[in-house]
Length: 138
Image (cartoon, rainbow, N blue to C red; front, top):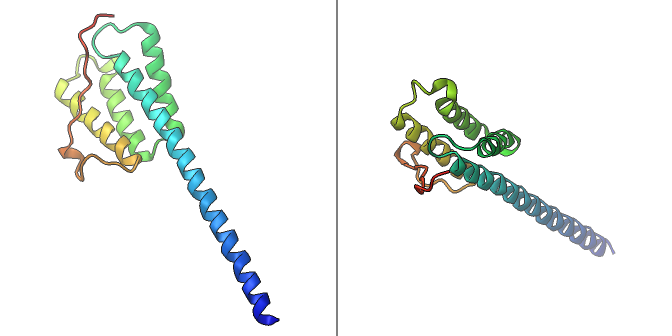
């Protein structure tokens, strides 16, 4: 009788543990999908402001995407995001250097990929990314 009771309790605990772990994995998958959607929107919005004289609606889309990243991004992404947006700010136009822009963009992309558990390299300083403009005018 005692053995049966112990077996029943062990089965209940094992079942509860399995349910808990399954739910935890489901929540992690949902969170990862949400983060990916926010990051995809950010990259799409960034593509809209490549080049000079981007339309106002693309600038607003980019600003919204940047602000929304504060909801889901890791601290390292937010720090890289701030460094990049400070570099591309209108108030910094006279000081902006393309090399610095590309370096900060690369770091931001690296940190985003790292936040998604897919860093493109072990060393963020050895990764290079660029925003590409198709040459199509606005």
